[in-house]
Length: 364
Image (cartoon, rainbow, N blue to C red; front, top):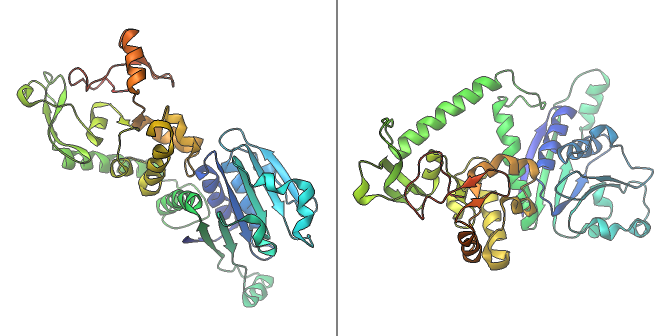
């Protein structure tokens, strides 16, 4: 079980946090228990959650009187179920609503007042408990004094929920830091400057890690001179080191415009890639090991993993590709030795099977 807190100064920030959660949920879905007093922000949170899942937040309203409302999702999970237990006398009143089906695979279930009948939600869920104002803060609010905001305690129970929480926390903490901790879910006017600083930092990081000097016009390709478990450490021109040449490996492949093989990469290597991190890397390895023959068939398979939704996939797929199995490789070889990416990247060649390629060649 993992626990995380976030402080919300206003409803806009609460909604922004919920949007980030929606973007972190994979196609398998998630059960979300929402707890807190009246006016704590539970319905505001579900509106933001719906937006993160691709639903117009204006269509979402509190289901206090109708008990449950459903919203079909455009991608990832199938349906968002919004349930309110406030007026129920017993959990049995949920039976006519096919509540058990809402707990199934591909469903996102958000339950307000979940503490009324906690046993119906099972033990694998994300619990979000909103703190309400103290009596003193309520009195101050009546006099027009703004109170300090709300704190939410988030508890993840079960491996899947923990994976989603890890991804969600990374998202929130990332954009909160970019805003200087100001909260409110507002975009900073200095986003362009921050992006420029990030790019400069990445250039410096690669320069220090890989010891690569500016390529001369005659440098047709980069090859590995030394490496470790994460791949290439130092590289040189193909013309200079032909006698001991090896193609770039691991994270070093990104420097030549290539990608990382999703079926071969270790957790430590995946963790170093932008937008992945430790939680997603662990979930990817676990999912790969559980698949037939221990391999993915397409990068899109990642959306079945909790913590990787369609929007996250769009950010990370640029770093990854899926290698062909032995059987697939034999078939493709018989057809001419070229493979065409299912995602429309184009015809690509394998560097490792022939010779170190140039920056415009991709291994997969």
